[in-house]
Length: 406
Ligand code: PLP
Image 1 (spheres, rainbow, N blue to C red):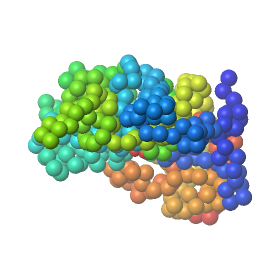
Image 2: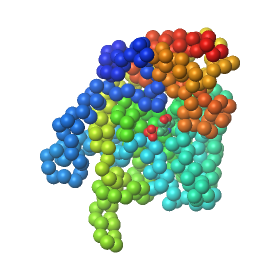
Image 3: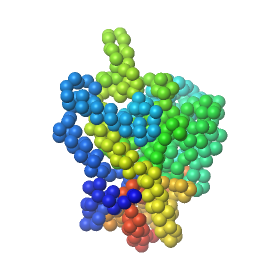
Image 4: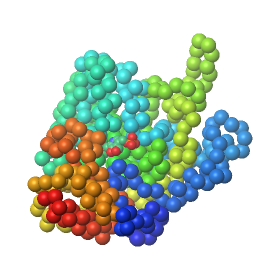
């Protein structure tokens, strides 16, 4: 039984006030709040257990290493990867995608080779590919969204040519909430021999993920959106791609032997984790994922689906409110503008005065904003602890914004 009020008690920050009003936190798409178990695990680590990983032979170092490796195992379970050795721990999706761009894509792509993207990608899944375009003459091939904001998997597949070397697509748009059929895209791309990177930064937050079922080659995720610490994250890499990948960062921890004229590397995944990692962050991340698995991602998905249908119903009555994206099965992300007036920043400021936190701006998705013909939206993004009462408060706040700005 999913008792959202009981779950809310796990998140200390949710009981605070902002501007004298109870906090209504609807900026989960940017970053989610942390449950007590995560905060405690990080505090405990610093207060009582801190040491560096992998290098020491002393008690604390061994324990820190065990905790760090337990986090890797939690990521593997969360994503249903075949094992922890397929998981590289890092600081988040941006690092994961850059690692693929530098370590895997750059060495195997030249002028005229193509990467297929959708216009709904976050800059994290665009800019690293622009580097390859600028530096190596790689061509970016863009797939448009449908009028309701959905992404047609068959159109993504139709964009593949004999020069396509990679399909890089989000599982969930951080602006539209659109969920993408990444399993179909992977299946179709693989039939044509093309690897697929699925940006799981938003997708992994809203429901269960099974990377083996999706079948993708790369699946980066973001710890801070998954109720873990900032600066945490991971990427699942399919074994064939892991074997092909070169290390992106060099340094300590990722080597087997270094001489004056030779270097050999540690076995993956450590080969891809140069330097001292975010140890506390990774440990907190593992605990966050254990917490989510205990709640059950199916239950989280069902709860958020209820919020989506309730919000859709309430928004219907607001005929001056424009919501970007209405794809079937969309995640609990609503990007809004008010007809006839009001910059998104003004909407956000008015909501803030009522204790409601939403994000306003371009959401790191310039090509999508250009496609939609807007410069900015106010985005309410819901998480596992949000309630229908908070949807009501949002509607009240929007009505006030409309009165003031419309
Ligand atoms: N991809 C998508 C779809 C996102 O929404 C975000 C963050 O907003 C990112 C990538 C970047 O993730 P990170 O903060 O882990 O680098």
